[in-house]
Image (tube, rainbow over all chains, first blue to last red; front, top):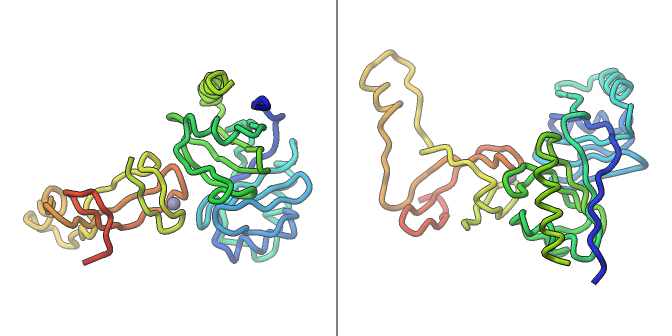
Amino acid sequence: MAETIIETLPPGTRLALRAAPEPAARLSGAFGVVLPPPLLTAAHGGKRAALRLGPDDILLLAEEGAAASLLQALAAVPGAGPVSLTDISHGQIALRITGPQAGELLNEGCPLDLDPATFPPGACTRTLFGKAGIVLWRTGAAVFHVEVARSFAPYLRALLDEAAADLA
Amino acid sequence: MLLIPCPHCGDRPEIEFRNCGEAGIVRPTAADDAAWTAFLYLRSNPRGLHAERWRHVHGCGRFFTLHRHTVSDRFESAP
Ligand SMILES: [Zn+2]
């Protein structure tokens, strides 16, 4: 069985968008991704992605260093309100888990059903890994993107490494 | 582990949720001791179907109301 690879991804821009579907839709052009995606799914285009984590809870991911210009561009959209947009780029970090056993590895600490039939590529959600709240996004059949609070990252990484050793 | 049916996310593991107590407790509008005692301290604590508030705190973040049978822990539709 091929190895499961856990990588820390380079820094990026993260914006927490709280908006009802209609105001969110007006920001689509300025962000470059059609907003809002269906509940618990991600939409992406180029280096940008939007993860719909709740009815009005959307996490925007973009290239590193884009926070200031994005905030400005999104705030300038005419008639966009009422929305709340917060730069949380440095609050969390991202990991990528790749391999045919990536789902099994995550199930060592996350009780969600990660079968591709119930959690297909494009699905995303907030959930738990051990005691850490994470955002889980399946970007491919055998690839997961994990967002975790920076302060919880060493804890998460240690648990994942231990779980990977168990699987190997 | 209980699977709790979130109206937005479907069946999800119980550790993603917080129980927020009995549902339908109405805050009194008048400064009346008996009404405030009931609001703050008195709960029905039934042996049977219990209407309760839940929050999907490690999920969509939303509050919602469910009816749980306190003996079997089964979630049932409203009586
Ligand atoms: Zn939910």
